[in-house]
Length: 233
Ligand SMILES: NC(=O)c1ccc[n+]([C@@H]2O[C@H](COP(=O)([O-])OP(=O)(O)OC[C@H]3O[C@@H](n4cnc5c(N)ncnc54)[C@H](OP(=O)(O)O)[C@@H]3O)[C@@H](O)[C@H]2O)c1
Image (cartoon, rainbow, N blue to C red):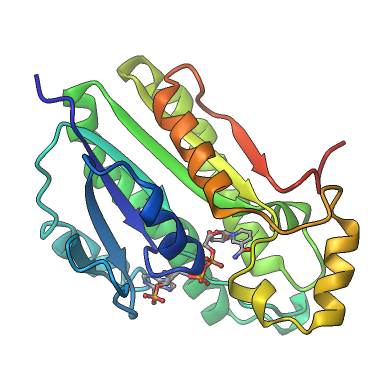
């Protein structure tokens, strides 16, 4: 039986995505899904361009993904973060954020679920942030869409556990990429002060959490915080 794995990375061009690809096992078939920026330096992998904001076109794009192996892993790093106070949010902001952070994610899972069920194996890992989950000021769009996708993960973990298909969320703290990297030194130091481990995360730690969830069928419906103790209660 073919036990090799295919990993589909949604949002592979993200700051985090482009840093974790290097840690993936060499025997994985890697499929990189991106929105507008083709990931650099990974030409040996299959790449698929898909606009998550165009939900009705997604299925057509997904048909271009041809998978060799029976074991499918989906990592969802695609994300839209518009910071606005709640009174300034438009319906367009809501639609765009939910299309990218929530609806496209569900649509893509629905597309691969029949194959995962047939093969009695699947791993779905969604990424969110510890800051976002806390609901900080100005993050209504990001927080509500990420929490909605986390709720979907919880429900699906129960619906498909009998098929050895697991659904989990990894909540990330601060890593030296994306929005954090754009902050000035004073703001970055202020954040570091609040993190018990007094540093940003190592990208290898993210891969270790991913690997744990891939290798552990009994871990489903869980939230793994990789945040240096930021949200420890
Ligand atoms: N960076 C951090 O420290 C941090 C902290 C906490 C949580 N996280 C979580 O980790 C994940 C990655 O974060 P990041 O900061 O590395 O992200 P990022 O650099 O902002 O990248 C966002 C990703 O989403 C994709 N995307 C956006 N709009 C899209 C669209 N319309 N269609 C298809 N793809 C689209 C982008 O693709 P294109 O650029 O190709 O369009 C890109 O790959 C997110 O889920 C985020 O919530 C990150």
